[in-house]
Image (cartoon, rainbow, N blue to C red; front, side, top):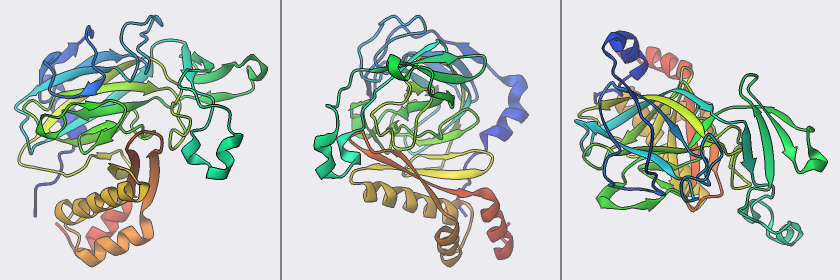
Length: 331
């Protein structure tokens, strides 16, 4: 049986006394994933406490400090990370660091019937809606347009839209899209308490984060979430002698695989195939067991249907895997 993915949560418990914490204040931001000079060198097991800008380049003071277009914090060079290893990133804490968020206010034309597109208001990338974020209560209240002010109050669910490493073959790819390396996946499930697993293509992994959303619905169908700058705390672990094809993730209840592609069915195919690999190669399920389990228990989330590459997440509850493994008597 191939080597199982590393459980970084267990690692945190066992190795907490050895932790090294980096308090990193970004000075340079990039609008693409690529092999840029490292912003900070860290070691496997280290914790990083840092911040991200919103998607248009505004910081915690709402000052413009970088170019619009999902400016990224990083890259973080992880010592010992090499191509064909896996980088595990445990998202310890994600939280907005200012009280004003912005979002678009018009649906993307590609999410409605073609004959309905002419009825849509003109789509604009400018942030046309504003939200007051209560950092203590954890809510976002619509304050603009004024005619709707106060009518919508949402619990926040802070997530990272952009999370990824340097792409393969030395490519530099816009932070507007995504691929095997991660990227702008805009998955609302990438919240505090989740471990994200990324394939490594470059020495040091060169890990980036950005594009914090206080709230976002499935699909990011207006092209944004409630965009806001973030405070972030994460921990990394390099998993040697283990390779994956597409990003994976887990929380206490689910394992998840991510496909990034267009059209949408191709993204679903990538995510489903990666889940089969995980169940068969790492959990030891036989072909028929893995297929039946997915057929009756799989769940799919739409990460985004706005970006150049769409994102589909395939997920399954750990409890169903445990039951199937016991039935197979898998050690």
